[in-house]
Image 1 (cartoon, rainbow, N blue to C red):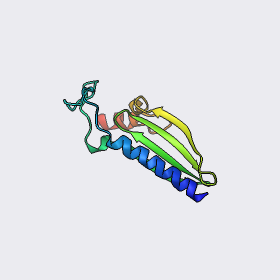
Image 2 (image 1 turned 90 degrees about the horizontal axis):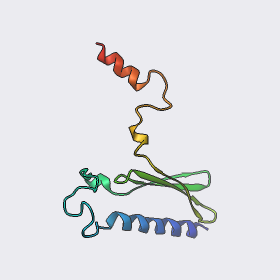
Image 3 (image 1 turned 60 degrees about the horizontal axis):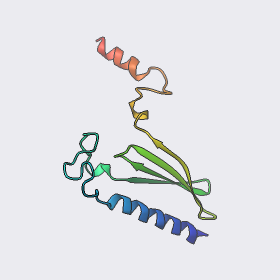
Image 4 (image 1 turned 180 degrees about the horizontal axis):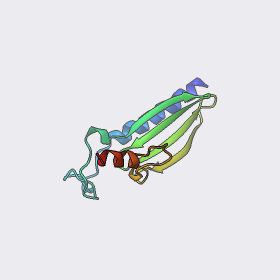
Length: 118
């Protein structure tokens, strides 16, 4: 059973390594100019795919984050069976534009107002 989990993690690692190491196709937007199709400068090394892993409750959670597209995906790996299941995928671009959400008082807006009045 542990071999199945290790095998799944190795396969996921190969997938991540392939995605990180894949060059831009020739002629793709930004391939020569260093800019994306939206005209924004690409980030440096931090623009590569990131993987985070957490062990809990008899399973491993793997989170993949693509800073270029601002998308994250969460997978669970069952330790007993080695089964990999996609739990969620989300584009966080709009989330990151929210000024405050589900935060206690004082909110960031209230703190800014306090600092601007002095």
